[in-house]
Structure formats: C-alpha cells, structure tokens
Figure 1 (cartoon, rainbow, N blue to C red):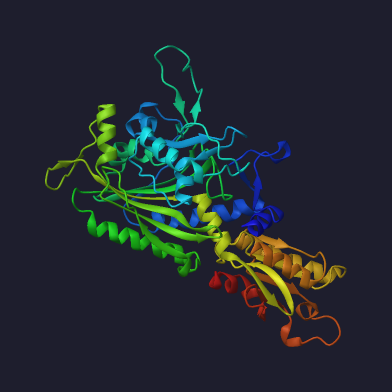
Figure 2: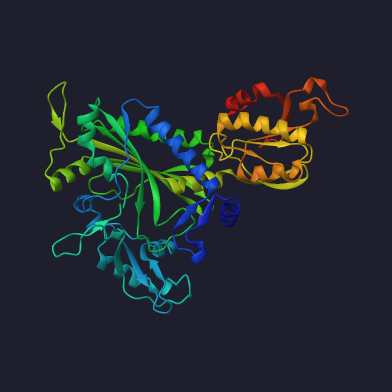
Length: 462
C-alpha cells in the first residue's frame, strides 16, 4: 500500500487534501492523471449501466435535500458508529472494528448499552493504536451524517440540513418524476454517480475509507415477488463488469451478509483483495419495497406504480447496486501495480486496461536535437491527439528512460519516430519510410506500423 500511495502522489494520480496546511484526514484530491483515470472509470460504468442497457435512465440529483429525507431513510436515527476515546491521548477508536480484531463480533442490532457491556468485558485486550495504553472512556454512538448550515436553520423548530450520507436517495425521490416524464416500461432502472459524505471516526487505508467520496448506484424497480431471477442476473452482470476492467478474477470474491436489515431480502458484497486484505468494493442488495414505502409515509406522496396493462397498483421492489468510486479506483490501481524485470532492469509498471489508461499513447522523436525528427514526431502526435485526446509528447532523456516513465503511469503504447520514418540518414531501411516503432507496455515488444494506420492500430487494441 505504501508503494501505491507513493506512486499515486509522485505521478500525479492522488494528492493529500489541503497538503500545504498539513493535510486533512480522510480527504484526497485527484491529480491530473488521477482525474483522467477516474473519468475513464466513470465512463466505463455509465456505458455499462445506462448507454448499453435498455430501459435504464441516468440522473444527477442535488446534494442538498429536504431534512425529512434523512429521517425517512433512517440516517438521522440509525446512521451511527460506536466510538470510545483514549483518556491518555484522546484518540478515538471504532469499538466494533477493534472488537473484530480480537475475534469478538458485535451484532449490528446491538443497543448502545449492549455494545458498551461487550466492550467493557474486553477492555483488557484492546490497546490504543496511537499510544498503546488501555484506558478508554465510555462507548458513545457517533452519527455519521455531516450537518450543514445551509439556509436559516437557526430558528426554533427548524431542522438542520445535511450533506448526503449516501447518493441513492435522489433516485427514490425522483421515482415519480421519471415515471411521469419518461413513461418507462416495467421493470426499469435508474443510475447515478453522486457525492456522499460521512463523518468517519477513523478514515483509513488511503482511498478505501474517506470522509468525502462518490458512489455509483443503480436502482432496478421491479414488480413484487419478481426479485429472484433478476437479482441473480444483476449479480452476474456486476461480476463480469469487473473482469472487463482487467481485474484479476482471483482477487475477487463474493460475501453474503450474515445479518440483514429487517426489510432486506438478500445482500451480497463483491470483495477485492486490496493490499490490506479482502474488503467490500460493491454491494448488491435486494431491498424489497422499503425505500419507496418510507418516502410515501414521510412525504404523503403516492409512489405506487400503476400498470397500464392490467390496471394493478403496487409499490415497486428495488434491487440495488452500490459501488464506491474511490474504492474502485484503488482496486484498479492495486491490480495494475507491478514490479518486474525487463531487459535486465527492475521496472514499475501499471498494467491498466488500455481503455482506462490516463494517457493512451506517448510520441517521441528518437533524438531531441534533430529538428527533422521533432517535426515528424509532432505531426504524428497531432494525429493521435485529435483522435484520442489524452496523448503525450516526450523528448526528455533517452528512449529507454521515456519508456520507464510511461510504464509507471500505465501508458499502453510508446511511439518513436526515427530516421527510417523520415527516409533520411545512414543505413536506413527504405521499407520503413512513413512508419513508426510502436512499443507495447506489457510485453516490451516492438513493431513497425504505418503512420496512416496508427490510429486504427491503437483503436483496435483498445
């Protein structure tokens, strides 16, 4: 993990938030190459879940919502983590996580008093991660919703505004609007990539657990009791999508939830083997009719669906997929990070799927100080830049060093313009005129490709 974090900063993928002020725990900024990779991941997700699917619709809902939304969703009353504070150094710990480390499971349905009793019974086994002492205060529940002062919520009788604890609520709130405006055939899906915020006690493991993040969610609205077959199809679809990103299947696994929420029919996580071990990357949930029923109850708005074919009215059931974009980003980066020997040297290479790579190709002249090579290389660069957008031009150092720099950021192809290309110089091969050398990132293999076919060559392999 330390190597990945170091590479991410050094090569412009991810920076610590507010670093010049000493940082801000649990917050990160995506750098120039990171934002390209992140956007490529978003585009791949959107294509798979909206563009390529029939009867799926995308939305982008506002972050601020009526405070009653979070009462209906259960976040105001039940969106809390148990914490205890070290009396020696004031470090806060997640009580349930610390208990797990010593093999004690804290049931999600436990009350605060029950959890406190379990913690008290194991205090002599839990040390502060910062100072090592075993002197903690009482267990307290800490609500994860981030409160905002948006508008005038200072007057008596008004409720605070919250930043979204999860992105999906905007889909439920717009269910009726989508039905009325789009008149979708049933069943249908709605997708969104949206921001979420959580007052995490202990952000950890780089991008895995942060206080600000993006969620990519789909909500599939189905008829009651028609969930089983559709649920299994969605699970398989999501699994296959991770493989399409080039993720090693041996690093993925399914984990079924042992303890379900009272309204849930089933819940599974896709877990990835991060450098810190297997952990959740996406959840697939069979939620029944809970979400729309709750919003009907709290808003007073009828969210029944009226089937035009048979006249039936029902509250749709929901099958949900929910993925953290930061966790996906970290999984893709970890999966791609490779140290290996090539040509007698140890190199670091990001073996990213080509369609995800932040830079698609790098064009170089063989020598920096030869204007004729530079001119031709610039022509090739302009052709590829127009076609693919994210293409680099690099003439700094020798060719070998350029290759290593591009390997570290995951560029799939390095293209070199030499004297054979321009048909000028000693001992040239006339058959290679107007051709460039294309070097493959993963194998190091090189081949000559005509400039006129270069864009098609790359596109076919992407």
